[in-house]
Image (cartoon, rainbow, N blue to C red; front, top):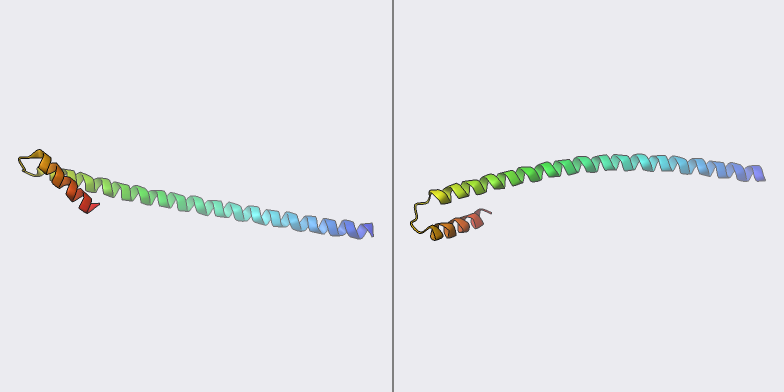
Amino acid sequence: MSDVIRQEFADRLVAVEEESRRVKAEMAELKARQRVELERARAEVDTVQKAKQDEMEEVHKRCVSLEIPDKEQAWVECCQFAEIVV
């Protein structure tokens, strides 16, 4: 009887170890996928930020090139344009 119990315990132990290895492999795969997705998302954010920065520089150039005698009025119009663009 004790041999049967030992064998059953050993079988369960092997099954638990196999499940543990499977779960560890799955976690490693998920972490790798997450890392790749995070890198892709960061690259996308950088691209959008660069585009917005370029857009704001263009707005600034337009504002500077305006020939409005009142600089404060030029700034107001520039800000209004920037709000429309953003």
